[in-house]
Length: 309
Image: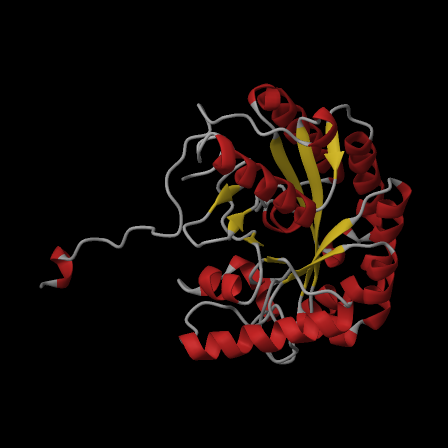
């Protein structure tokens, strides 16, 4: 068949499910919004280009300007951010590169002391998941998960690919390796089931994300606070007909800069004191939703939890 006449591939991973008309999700304590911090704890290779603040040197090896900017995160920015989380009683959902776990033991110790959720986030943030062959990807995932279990003391339940990358087989492989959910498909305000047995999608945000807001769009600290407040207020209003999820994606080398710290603190204070908010982790959101799915299937069928059947 002529390539121009071949049908376009369809998305087989999940079905279309408009949020209107879904049976309501109920969060613990009657909360309307489940809120979690997606804290990216990453290691970047010095011999590859990656997320940059200045494009002029991004292709150089080494690139002290951009590499040093990123490396500020584990050295300084993380520790400033940690104080804000502690001040407001927030546990992180740590999106952890396995090489970061191996290289930054003090960060892992801090997270373990606070009972953080640990999500698999690839080996490093310079190696993307896409285009791996099946056996190569399986070996990669096994090695990464074993490393994360060793460093954190806990087998990850969730996954977010470096730069949110996957292959077409990633969710299936992750399910086979014992994981329950992914964050990569940022297309909903509620969790939903993927067409992979036992695998969920949990909401994550590329919009409410410090890299997008500060680096890509050049917004200010007051802009950030206003956006966080507006996001929460709107989701709280929407949740009158069923619970919503709000994720706040943070990178220590961005939000951990000194001149941004007061604005993170102000935003978190608003969230932590907002009525009807469940301050939680992505692990607990996935587990709660999975319980709702199981309960619905055991009584009224598969329509009662807001996900695609």
